[in-house]
Image 1 (cartoon, rainbow, N blue to C red):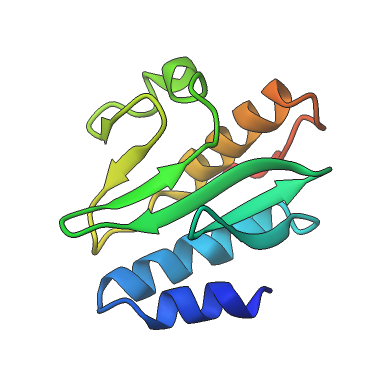
Image 2 (cartoon, one colour):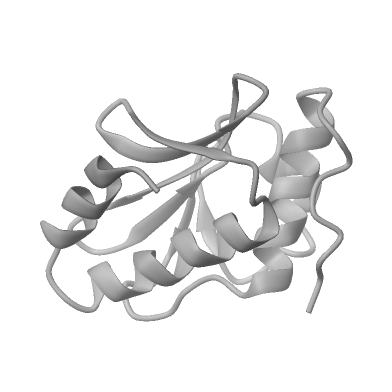
Length: 123
């Protein structure tokens, strides 16, 4: 784990910090070989040198960042009920993304990046 991500999370107020800490844990459990770093001032995860995920806290929401403009379009059914832009999925500051959704996001991004099929975990 990257100390800079620890610092990023420590700089946030609750419940943002614990919600994003849970997302961090889920990403690292699903893709244990991911390299954790800071990219554009936000926590990010790389596999094979390619950024596959990231997250950030904003004033009124949290964002999951697939680091691709097409991942979210491929998961419209799974993302029903969430707000999104082309490059970010917004979610509540006090409710982490469900593990199966994170797995689907990672799987889609990793396939798009030409990496392994990604996490098979869906529970």
